[in-house]
Image (cartoon, rainbow, N blue to C red; front, side, top):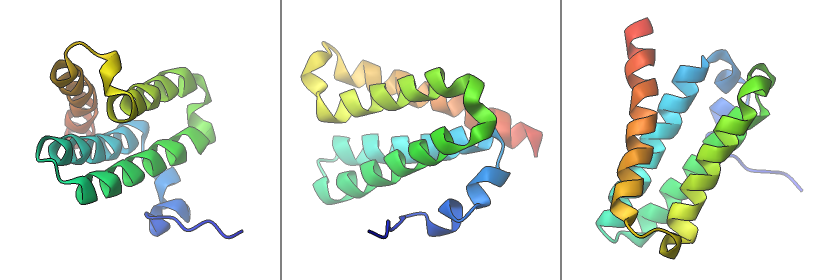
Length: 115
């Protein structure tokens, strides 16, 4: 079975040229798109954003440079999945979404400052 990637150019190896901060900042962009689509009840965009987010998480987890950070990356992926696939687990879903957004925003700020 041939696996089709949404981010084909990134999956082909370009992803592994990015720093961890850049990778997480890109994930954060997709997390933000997911949250925005959720808030607008745009299910078509939400589904696509979730798919893109999970693919970027998986590409980051497959990057052997981050073997010492797998627990943190996996935990953020797990929280993302809980937010969208099991939202009843949270008493304040909006707050949790904001926290996840803020977490990834820090990487975007750091990655931007390094350029």
